[in-house]
Length: 498
Image 1 (cartoon, rainbow, N blue to C red):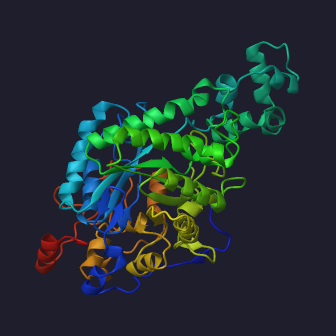
Image 2: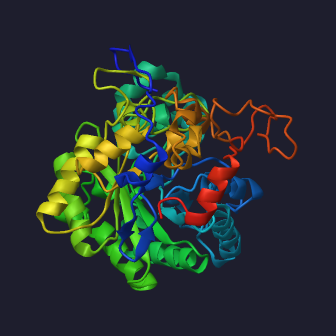
Image 3: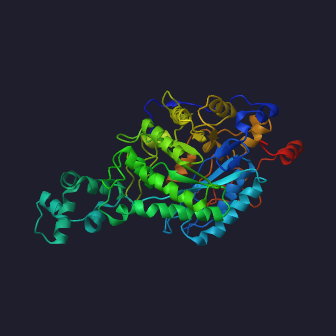
């Protein structure tokens, strides 16, 4: 991963731990309405991909235990990982592209609602993504994958040669010669692996995305509703299809690229069809980027305008992130795929304890505050969720008090300690296990390994019934935390945040 040149070490702080009485009177533990959806309080576990599904994209027992463990900590809401809306092979990622997935997803919603005592609301993030291939071996690239266009052969002085001889001659040019004859797209495919772009409207299936995607998202949302999810989050962030339509790099010439008005057109059409499919009584929001953090990409000024359009359209919540793009990703090794969290934009999405003077904590706060302010100035009350390096009560409460956001998302901190909100609400904040922001979890994700946290994945490996990683070296679920008898009674009687 890209790292800032300053390399300043930062350490998370537990901050002030409130008493039980203070916590239960705090903004963080006050209720909030997201359109038709009531949250008991304002803690939010954002979508994280833990690689717990299988090659069929099904809900496995590992998936159920992963989310049930978060639910035991009774956050206000959990968002299930990015779940594919197409019924196509996509590795061990959850899918929702066919009705056959509904039963498994229903088991998941029931498990979460049961584990939280009915207190946690469960949403699912639904996503579309374009094809990306692994970086090829150069010889294989020239032998099999490179399209020998007349323009390429002319630049290389190989017009008229038989196909095989031309390929052999091109390969023999070597790296210096390749860069001189390959066009930019072929050069990028050789260096990073072939990747589809929303700008590729010469490809029929890319040209048809505006006609195809609204229906795919709407069908997925209906399945989520049937499976018992409390709402859906449309994935408009990071390196994926919908974020690419919003990006300033989208220069499609078919009415869906170029200006802001054209770039937001498809995301609004997707939302409109989803809303029509699930009705006004079902929560629908989106996650989008407060800043792409890439050269030539969308900025905070763009995102504030997008946010206003989403709010005016009637979305029930807006959740912000930042960066995480393919555009500046680090070159992968041969045989590996590019990973969108390895460049500067990736660092902005998941900063670590080695940082610049700004530090890794709350890097998304200022941009999100600007977004929320713009929405409020327009007289709209759409709730805004802010995530990014939040790891203690004091920080979360300050964000709410300042009006920077309405709900506070904690991804890595919730992974480090799924019980952090419950512990804080019970006045036991000093027992919270703080994320150290080493990005150990991100390293596992990059390798498509089952994600865990180094703060707990070696603990009690011999515990009866513990589920372990495929190599048997790590536990897949955080160790249980047991409240004392009085706290158990208090929690059971009143519920967190009620």
